[in-house]
Amino acid sequence: MYTQALNVKDTALPAADPQREARFQARIDAEEKIEPNDWMPDGYRQTLVRQIAQHAHSEIVGMHPEGNWITRAPSLKRKVALLAKVQDEGGHGLYLYSAAETLGVSREELVEQLLDGRQKYSSIFNYPTMTWADVGVIGWLVDGAAIMNQIPLCRCSFGPYARAMIRICKEESFHQRQGYEIMVALCRDGTPAQKAMAQDALNRWWWPVLMMFGPSDQDSQHTDKSMRWKIKRFTNDELRRKFVDATVPQGRYLGLTFPDPDLKFDETTGHWAFGAIDWSEFRRVVSGDGPCNRQRLRQRKRAHERGAWVRAAVLAHAAKRRAREQAAAGVAAE
Amino acid sequence: METPLFTYTLRLADNALILGHRLSEWVGHAPVPEEDLALANMGLDLIGQARALYTYAGEVEGRGRDEDALAYLREVGGYRNVLLVEQPNGDFAHTIVRQLLFAAFAHPFFEALARAQDATLAAVAAKAVKELAYHLRHSAEWTIRLGDGTPESHRRTQTALDDLWAFTGELFETDQVERALIDRGIAVDPAALRTRFERRLDEVLAEATLARPAGGFTQSGGRAGRHSEHLGYILSELQYLQRAYPGAKW
Image (cartoon, rainbow over all chains, first blue to last red; front, side, top):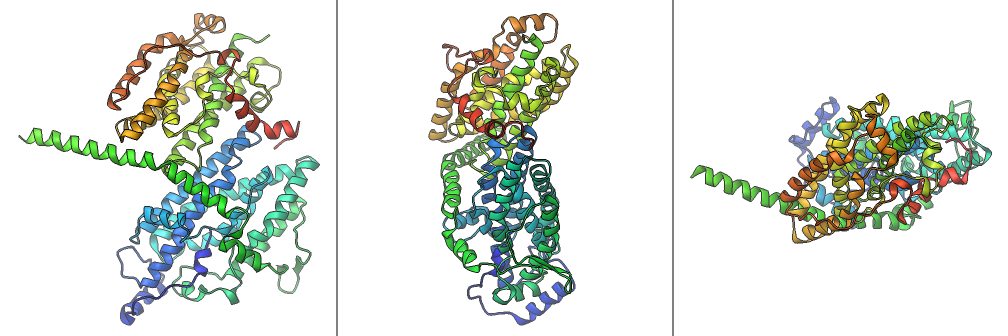
């Protein structure tokens, strides 16, 4: 999910090494995987750390909006499915942090940067989950959009990230079907009140989901380099169009109306044409003024702070244990 | 009129659901992401057990109630779980100690139930015993780390043990309902498990440098439907959608 970090400009980098860079680029052009111990340009490393960390943070922060409904899920079957799903997201966070660590940063540093605002998570999680239908819509649309973004990342030039994405994509695609199944229960088999709940959720989430693909290609600062390095394989607009084409028929099957009067099938292009995205909202939410930005970060900080004594205990106990083992080994040696 | 087998099955199911629900409240708020996963895992095990047990209770009752009717449409007084499992999560030490106390009882309990006369309960127990073995190991390891960690973690864990100890007696109580089933080899006599429970617990507490609280009064009543104030709030959340949209399917 969540390639928002690929739209950010890099800070100044040390002088380039043209020969090595040329060899590096040749490997990428030959579709070879770059592994952690291989030489890589600083910009490549920086882009990947930022991207993988942002992806990991998104998984961890993303546990909150859906986790919000675990205790209120409407049946035991839905409850275990949601609990397992949110658990999966936490697992994705963990192996993405591990992938980032292969680039020479620690998980602790990255978490620090999330909590003090230097690194971001996907802006989609700054919207609230108001009703149960939001859980369905998140699975169907948010995970659906994430998959569009992530399938190409399975072929990303950096080996550890590409391999992590293969497993993540399998799980995400299961989540997407699970979300859609919730929508089917609400819309096709549900009462009028349930269907209205589903329509309301679609109305609130549709535009923010389209924004998940990032600024349109003419405004994206970073697409060129990321594409040349084969971190990114398709542009924001290409992925967004693919997503809309795949999603509109699904929504129509549910009998829902998309909140876009300009949405119509274009016979000449064979694609669904959609209305203009309100990029001022996107910029506002990315820069911190979405409905839940402060709440989400506060939730993360609180969990981190409340866990501090536990983490301290783990280290203290490990040190005691080591000391006892060493003492025992010393006695044995004598 | 409830049959003893129905009541007995319901008690086991309610224990599993309420403790599973409590663990699920942690997800996203744990001290480290690894614990978000582990607590969710144990919650999933328990709610899975609850589903199988509710389904069986519904069959035994024969009035057409399924797992959701039993979980979502009973009032506080109809719930039969022990008081231990409805106690609030508190800090991480409270959650871990609650899990340790429950698992140190439930692991040998399910071992015995897996050999009992009722084929369905025995089958549920055979699966649960593997899950509870993990819950016991996980909570024991954490109790040791926290007890023998820093002065703060030691103090918090001892406090949790002192707070929760009064709820352990109820795990070993039997009443008329169970007596009849124990005599027929269907239910497990929990009194027979007490020595094992205490031995296992003492091993863990010794390594954790924690002191087992001395005797004291036992708080009980949950299995007969007399609960703490906490259960009402759990059910308010758990049952919200089923109550707000009667008859809707989700």
